[in-house]
Amino acid sequence: MPMRRLAFLLVLLALPLAAQNPAPATQRPDLVVVISIDQFRYEYVTRFAPYLSEGGLNRALKNGANFRRALYSYATTYTGPGHAAIGSGYTPSRSGIVGNNWFDRNNAEAEYCVGDARSKGGFSPMNLASDTLGDRVGERFAGSKVIGVALKDRAAILMAGRKATAAYWFEADVPGFTSSSYYRFNKPLLDEFNKTVPALVKAHPEWVQSDFIPAADLAKLTHDPESLRKYKTAREGLGVAFPHPIKSIEALTATPFGNDYVLGFAEKILDAEKLGTEDGTPDILYVGLSSPDYAGHSYGPDSLEAADMVMRTDRQLEQFFKMLDAKFGNRYTVAITADHGVQSIPEVAKDMGRDAGRVLMRNPGAQVRKMGELAAGRKLVEKSMAAKLGVKVTDETETTDDFILYFDEPSLYINWARVRALKLDPERVKKALRDSVKEVKGVRAAWTNTELQSLDRRADGLSGLMAHAFRADRSGDVLVTLKQGWIWGYSDTGTTHGQAVDDDQHVPLLFFGRGITAGTYDDEVAPTYLAKTIGSLFGVDAGGIDTEVLPCVR
Ligand SMILES: [Zn+2]
Image (cartoon, rainbow, N blue to C red):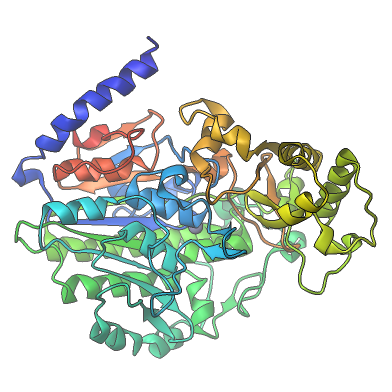
């Protein structure tokens, strides 16, 4: 029997034991704070290591547990799947969160991962198919509270889970934090905090470069020449270079000050909900820092802005941990991770001599009527596919006759009405689409859903990563991954994540506080292990069977 399988079996055997023997009460925290920094690759903590504060990320890097090889074990590194993985310990094939969005074949429309038309406010964890760490802790300890807060609804909702006490997210129309009727949320707390929004915007009229990194070092650590700034995205009037003027709360959320906003509300929640009291019922607060993602999409990981975001986020966490120390002494535990990393802006990567680009597969707008007007990659696939199937098409063919009905990363959904009308064999059509999409520059691999149904989730390499990403009822007919450096393109600027590449998969996985044994670990693990690891402190078994209790709590 291979060692890997043996280790896997031993873990399985050890599980019931862990569930029966929680950490001694003296090692059990009264409060767990799980912090997800949205779009934060592990590479940041190494590139900027000399300039980090003593009490921020270093609290875990130097005095806590640092898992240096934590990689997502699925191919679809997006925000929805990532936060579901952090909260539940399951990959998309089991959490059901296969993307930020997918195509709902029954209603023939896009479905948002936390969309819920039945709840007032429009969002809930109804699409989450798995239980979570919070669910399990709540079942074991009556009176435990599990609360999520983030700028993004999907971050707060998917981490906190289906049985959460409350989840709060930012809504520009309020403007401020909000929730939905799915939860028994604290309305007076919301109303009081939202009054502080105008003062917050006034307090931060602009975002300037901080001096935590000396200018000479900064130039070596970034790649941000003026000639490439046209490939940055100017978001909410912020512009593409320092100083960035902040004219609204929406603009502020895309700067480091958005973190202050979330962490400030998190502190109010701790007080108002009396989290972490010594009543024998542990509480969990999930905090999603979404601002690094907003800025990261616009400016890219090689920018001056990214460097400043890392520096300021680190200092904000230092202040937050000081606050936790003052309130909870040594009775709390912190876990820090990220929902995914990010790749360079393709034009910046090319400038550094790397292969990179944008693959244009986007859905046509309502005004697009002819095949000739489709995005370049999409048109190529339609024509190649038609040729393979012996169907005649031209630039003048109506888009209602397209073979691709809908695209949402990484899925292509076939226009089955068209296939039936042409009396074509369904498997032949899927294979034609798979083979045609592979002809597009930047595409690494593609599978039909028939192929994905039989892939083993334990397989090594790309096959296993894609098996973990696939779910038959929500994923498309053909799924696609891109080569290192390549991203799905929707505009000529900015960058994104979502691929099975180190830049997107490799994130921090850090712990410190009660019950945590300090150390640096180099085994390959995944952020999905977080749920089972924290659960073991309380004697509850959370997370998928492919996850383990990390050695920092054993
Ligand atoms: Zn994200």
